[in-house]
Amino acid sequence: MTNFALRLLILFSCVVLTACSSSPSTHETAENNQQALVDRDSLMQVFKVWQGTPYRLGGTALNGVDCSAFVQTAVKEALHIPLPRTTKQQVNVGFEIDYDEAKIGDLVFFKTSWQVRHVGVFIGNHQFMHASTSKGVIISRLDNPYWASKFWHFRRVNTRL
Image 1 (cartoon, one colour):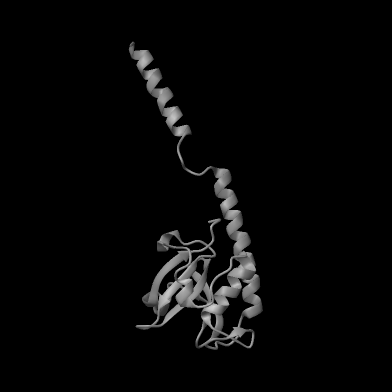
Image 2 (spheres, helix red, strand yellow):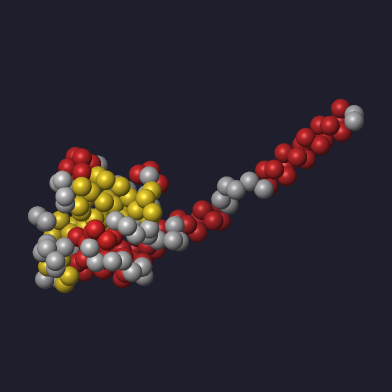
């Protein structure tokens, strides 16, 4: 095989292999980003209804709600994904993901004490919405020292992500 033919074969092989790569297209990335914005807007609409609702253990209504009931409602109303009622059940739904892979709509779990667990919904930019025992339904930051020290893991329940 001549030197020219060998170079041509190598160049052709590189082009073919690059075309078969699995990196997402710009179109797919744009669609994913658009869907994330739609999901965030939907979650924020639910948040606005519930914002300031006081925390009540076992509560499921606007006069008092606990963290898992708020998450169950928010994810059902905004993302149309049914979740079980309790944090203990929710922690078994979907699959665990790494911190740096979190996307809008993922569940974020915390270990607030030896046996107590807390859950919220990730809304991007290091923020999550949840029902706080002291402040009711609010938005908090994952990089807040309290929440950062209690962080457990993320779970993906949205199969579109």
